[in-house]
Length: 108
Image (cartoon, rainbow, N blue to C red; front, top):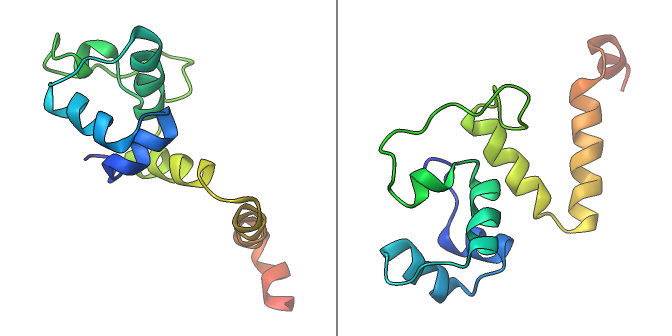
């Protein structure tokens, strides 16, 4: 919920059928260890949090890819990974324009 992703988005990204993922979220099923690891990486949380072994999420260790990332940046990263190639090219063009110096944008 904090990443504003649907169950279907998470399920497909990790390789679950959406109905199976729903059962996992409700606690009716437990994923295999490799799938749990994939799920943790995708969501940027520890297995302890997902398994309710720890009530609070600690910040990721220094040097990890999620360290210092805002929820918005994490969500954007996830959504960009799901883009089809033609949409990804369009996203790159838009990003290059946004990141270009203001003087160059004024000329266009």
